[in-house]
Each structure stands twice: as structure tokens, then as C-alpha cells.
Image 1 (tube, rainbow, N blue to C red):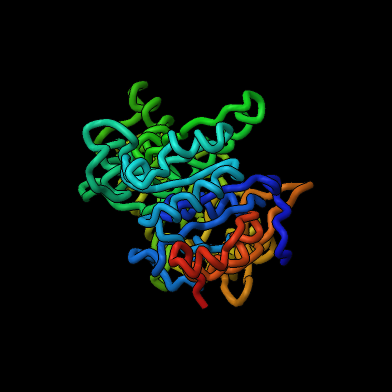
Image 2 (cartoon, rainbow, N blue to C red):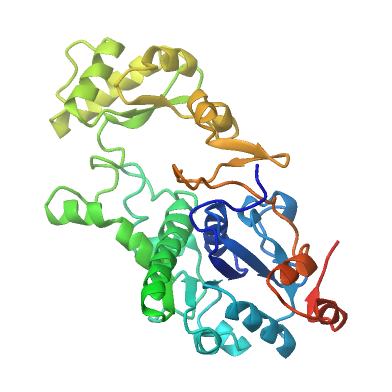
Length: 383
């Protein structure tokens, strides 16, 4: 794959003050789409890294410089980068960058067109803004965690996909791109306050609509999309694996019913009949292995698919045909998404350790006297 960014964001420059989770994912996405992102790490790296630096996919596609932000010269160095950037991303608690001298006021003074992206869980204000939290806490108060799970059981944590990455990273990226477009018209930058609690709440818009229309109950596991409906659920196969069933529309349900050979099943439109229908479906799927059912349903409109373990997902025929997962620099990883007809995104550099590219990256951004910065301990070049 090309080492030169070629996506639709080619030419957009981004300074990333490295945090954890949603901030790096947002920076990775921008880099995947062609932005020139420079990653500002602390010397020694992040103690909360989820993987070794050279295998941390969230760090792909952008060089890393290590800068001592406790040194005023380090702050000046970042401001020099800001002056050349379109976007800055930071993911610290409210007030941290202000105390460092890298808050919105200082950065926008150096670059009035800058879009200053702030990634937090609780947001920049509100009673919880200064308290610690994680993905599970943010989606809890947003109303997004309570509905997930089976009837009679506790809420089930949806990894950190719903909060960190969907409610956090993707909303940050949407806000940044909107603000960059606006800045190119107005000539003025602004601050984007991306809070996971806000994004997670926004993601619940359809459920809020259903609830206020009397179509969604707060009783977990009793609704159409929360495993309440037997025709939207997962079923165990004879080999201990599972099939997902999504027969919401009558025609898709009918196709599934016919393929399964269900004769006179309980009425799917009667919630009182759902337990009996679920038992019939469970008994049917338990008759064959996942591979057998996959072959039977392949190519049909029954909305039935195998539940594939993460390790096996890259080898699924559909994923393989589309290149949904790729091997790049010896690391299997999700390919950039979405896809573009004229300016395709490409994977460029593999993830690297903090400070691995300090000399090269600072030079590419036009920073002078890099050797002296390293000699003074302001920046660090690692091996």
C-alpha cells in the first residue's frame, strides 16, 4: 500500500495531543482518510496503552514525536505546529491543556483558523465534568446502557464500541470536519466539544422516539431490538456456536420460516406467543452446526448469518472478497472505512512507539533546529 496519503482529507493537517481510546481512534480515522496527522506523545509513552506500540492499530498512519510539555519550550514547539495545522485534538480532562498553555485561547491566538477538538466523557461543563469516568459510566447516564441485555438479567456492556468509539470518536470526527468546512468559508476556527455522554444520547434517538410513542418499554429484553422479539435474536447451534436472526420484516421472516421448515409456528405478531416461538426456533437451530446452517442460508433473503469470532472475521468470504480486513506491515487490521470512488483511502505507516519519528516528522512540518530541541531535552527521538 502507498505511503503517501491519498484520501479525501489529503492536505488537512492535524496535531494530536495523545490521550487514550476515543482520541487516538479519531486521529487514526482522520489519518486513514488522508489527513497529515502528527502524534504528540509524552516521552516514555502512555501507561494505559492497550497493546504494544508496534501492534496498537489505533496508532497507525501517522508519525509520533515525543515532547516534554512540562518544559515551556515544549509548549512553544507544539504551538509552532498548531500554527501550521487545520485541527488540534486533545482528550484530557477539562482545564488540563489550559494549565499547560495549550488551551483554545493560546492555540487560536496563534492560528485563528484552527479547529480545536476536545474529546471527553462528560463534556467541558456540567456537574460531572471534572470527575473521572470510563465508557461504561458515560453510556450509563445517557440512557444507552440500561436497554441492552436480556429480560430478567442485568445490562450487558457492549464492549466500548457504543461510548468511546461511536458516541465519542465518530462524533468528534463529524464535528471536526463540519468545523473545518465552516472555517474555510468564514476564516475563523472554533472549539468542538465532543462528549461521549452527548454522542451516546444522540445515538439513542430512534429508541427515544419509540419510547415516546409507546413502542418501547424500559423493561429490558422485552422490545423489538433488545432480544425481546424471537425473530431478532441469536440462537445456539449443535456445535455450540450461534446464528444471528434478523427477520424483522414479514417477507424476511417468511423466508427464514420456510427454510427452517417451521410448520404452523406461533403468531409472531402476538408478544404473548413469543416465548413459544423462541423455543421452536431454538430447537430448530440446535439441530445443525453453524457451518451447516450457514450453507443452507447462504444467498437467501432470510436475514440469518453466522456469529463469527473476531479472530475468524478476516477470513469470512464476504470480508475477504471486499478486503474488509487487510494484512499490512505484518499486522492484520481493519481496512480504512468508508470507501471513496475517486480519492480512495490507503494505509500508510504502521503503528510506532512514542518518539519514533521525532526528527523526520518535525522536519516535514518545517520546524527548525530540531537537533537542538533534542539536545535540550525538549523533544525525544527514540530508536
